[in-house]
Image 1 (tube, rainbow, N blue to C red):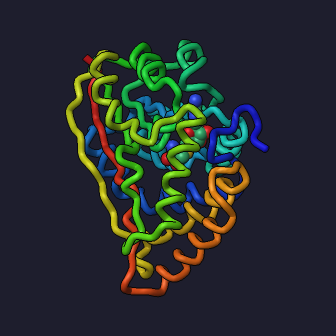
Image 2: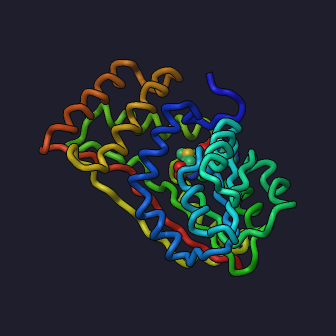
Length: 275
Ligand SMILES: C[S@@+](CC[C@H](N)C(=O)[O-])C[C@H]1O[C@@H](n2cnc3c(N)ncnc32)[C@H](O)[C@@H]1O
């Protein structure tokens, strides 16, 4: 059973580890996006929906001791992890706090330094009112500050190749589950308009599409995703146990079968600047 401040994917040890694998595989694209947005030493960065902090600690290195990372998440379990790990690493420039991006974020930011750059990856797709988060960010950002987003549009294009009904049904179940929880697996399609309405100029939109063959490092992304998430879809009634079993058997085959691959969901990158 989920607690009140757990998002739909959960915040247990399995999700913590999965987010770490995912971060490693997406670290290069993430660093490129920060570079493109001109992230500099000494800046104050908001890591919105920071999770257990995989990107937070890298941001802390990028901005250095003269900068600051405001790490905000809905989950008190993830925030406790970020605090403990920041202490263990001796990172004194990480300020981790619980905040709801569509609730009290503006209040939580009110007595903290103004933001130079806001980063949010795979967060807006879970928000019931993304506009509220952008308004909260905008209200505490300097003119010329940047928002850097990695999120989903066309999530349901995720496919096993050749096509496989088990995989198709799991993707559909995922989209339904997120929507029922108030999220939107197509949110990145709406973000440019929401950014413009919230006082930002959109400077850059790009799409990162990956291919995951069984022998590729990138295969760990769909593989860890389905092995942690599909059983949760079964537990919540979105997927049958038989479909879950079929899906996981498919992944086992893809892993060693050079004739097959997975097309993971495309990740949309958006960079916008505060007017
Ligand atoms: C898929 S994880 C991504 C974590 C991190 N951004 C990363 O890239 O590793 C989504 C995160 O968004 C957080 N989240 C979901 N809804 C939120 C909300 N309303 N306010 C703040 N954080 C939220 C979750 O707790 C979770 O840590």
